[in-house]
Image (cartoon, rainbow, N blue to C red; front, side, top):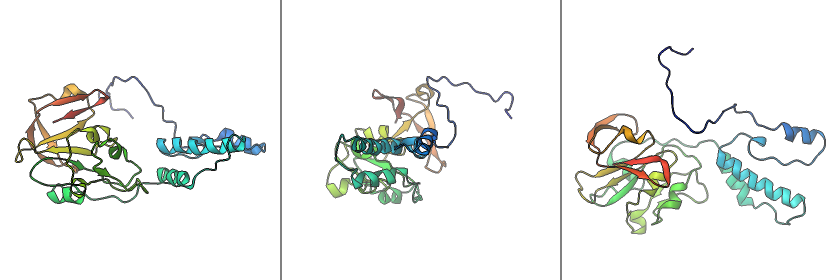
Length: 238
């Protein structure tokens, strides 16, 4: 029951109506019942994450093309392997701490200078956009299984992060922050993705920062709030 006085109104431009986790497979079943050759993808095949639905459509498209004689190419085994990974349930959950050992455990350099991304991923899920946007190619995920945890390989590749902030912006889970020690190794600037209204925080404000467990770390000044032209729903708070 709603609590009187607790209602809130939010401005929005799109409403996604979630109707439940049931496959939308009525036409597939009807086709099979009439003896028709049927092909299914997305929610007509099974409930899965959006990228899994898109990839299953790619497979179904190849199968339809073969059935119609438009191609002799079969569905590659690697397509089916990728589809299985995208449909899989989350894997291992990784415990994180807020100490320097956390940085090292992520393959990050905890050196006193430079700039480095901190990868806060805690669960193995099929996700890898951070690996594609790094101009230095320093973020790595096992190509054979994108459910694995990302690693920052600056030391291994003998390259440095340039602080472009692309990985911070693109992460759908807001799970990457950037620690910049280039100006002051003792008081680094931390870049955090922010998806609330941009005017809720401004340069000069004092804010309480939390660790990955939601525990307060202290009060710090906001240096800059930076809008991202390519992503109007995420700002970067420094």
